[in-house]
Image 1 (spheres, rainbow, N blue to C red):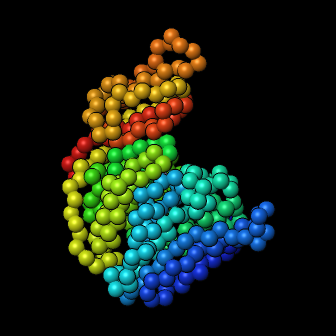
Image 2 (image 1 turned 90 degrees about the vertical axis):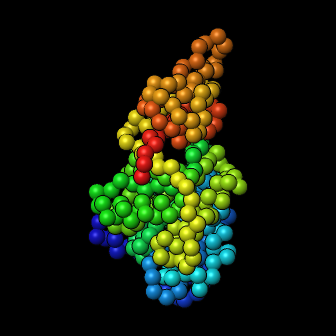
Image 3 (image 1 turned 135 degrees about the vertical axis):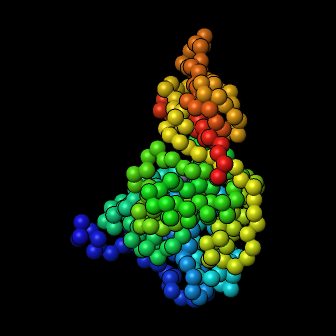
Length: 336
Ligand SMILES: [Zn+2]
């Protein structure tokens, strides 16, 4: 363990994290392959430094097929001026760059799901090396961490900003303050079904104020969802004390995810017909979808029921579903 911690990361930044002003560069990871024996993975990064203040670490495309985050972050990197910043902003618009470049959730190099790869390894796969760099180099520099997600090709979400319920209530309150400032149409007290190896968990265990989003899905972004991402990003940076300006307050509806009954999974595969849409209120036991077996005609569809009453906040996106896929997520409307 001690030896692993002493192994330096193979990733080198071409930007100086302490230099004043706006710096655009790369995180360069050597990657020897058939078409480039001494090739590299070049992950774009922007660092903005202006005087004293907190550090915000901003990332998108932790999953490569989620686009609102990269849009908001490439946009910010292209227009940010040092004089607008009070402290430091580190922008990595596409965290799992090989996945982002391929338009896939996981890395085409090693099939690595970056958000299940933390704390990573400096001597591991490409995805593990990226995780290790965030774990040991970037996260320790940060006070506030915003990691954008969306549904990708296989899920669709009501657009929301979220933080986790944490044992440290001061850390939790700081995160929910930023969720409120972000001002997405929905704000979520988020429950994870699979928290092991997540970037979220790594940041929270380091005591960082961690905020995430799910801003849409289907493997694309809309004008509306990109607008929510850009406006929310600016609001969050102002609220975190990293950027000058006035917050543009937005109405938001809070949703809670009290337990695993929020999640409904398919037990059968086939053609899915949704009986409720995103944003619809459903009762406990209400049919939310039916799944037709497609190997022959004449078979009755299997009905999928909501396991609690609430608002449909996420759904499976493709028209074909496989056993074990998450069909729908039901959140509970709460006052903040
Ligand atoms: Zn994601």
